[in-house]
Length: 375
Image (cartoon, rainbow, N blue to C red; front, side):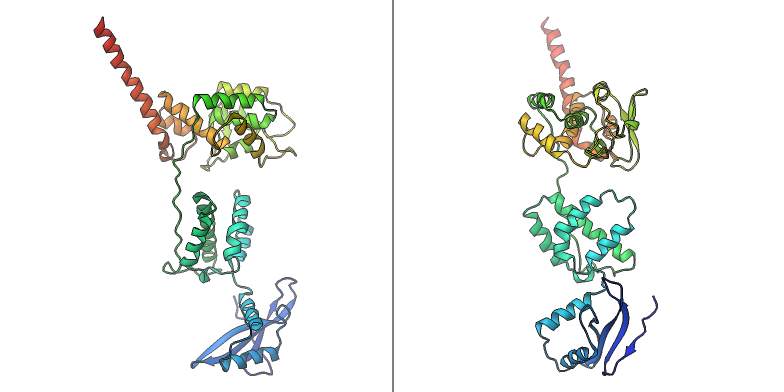
């Protein structure tokens, strides 16, 4: 970027450069002062012509007070701080630029909520080099009092992405590790939700009694196939191959399109499901992709008497995996592919269920031998 031309004024140590108003885009002067402090030349921005109502005379008065070591009145201090922050890459500006440059930003809605609710009030008007480890630690600990570790982790992950984005794009400098270190909270991702036979029976009964066709269909699909919530929202009729018996998952969580078998229960459900002139199997009110279905599925969950912390769709995905693993008939590699896990490690949480089923199967030989010996 070429160096901006400096324009002298009639006041010593006061000059300006031409800029644009941050709102209207109209040309305006940006005033600076130069003076010596402890023998060193200091150069400071003191304000904008229109935004801060700065003038050459006013800038000169601020310079004189600085030279004399006077403390500026609160109003002038605030004005100087505001002026110094104009055109700086604050976290809010980085967020706007980050969103602008992202193509097909899938997590934008969730990230926007995290930024506006949590990050912006805390760090929005600060640039990354003004934020310290202590600031982030206080933010993390305060947020953990009211939010889950996973929510806090996602907020900090977004914060880290914005800082790295600014540095990689040359908008900000990379904070030194000694000054800014982001400690993530521990998240227990090994939670495996399951249903007892009684709970499953109550849930199936509650689903059959509910009038919301899409909520019931999505819950049964999660139980029959182990599909994720987002995959159910995106599912289109064109993704279902009734002839070959497969469902194509376009761009699932792992990132690569995959297919899963169309089992008998799912086929029957889909063949009976009404098509309403939408490409989506479970469309939203306007026929487009559905965004939410929490109300109806939570009503079904409550009617079935399930625990408050049971997540209806994600929990049913776990129930699907647990049933297969505990049957002893499905190896972990097959289960990994059915769940479209990208790595075997994600499927290991179900290993103990399969091991228990194998132990029970092996114990049958004891009973057979005892029976043979008693004859």
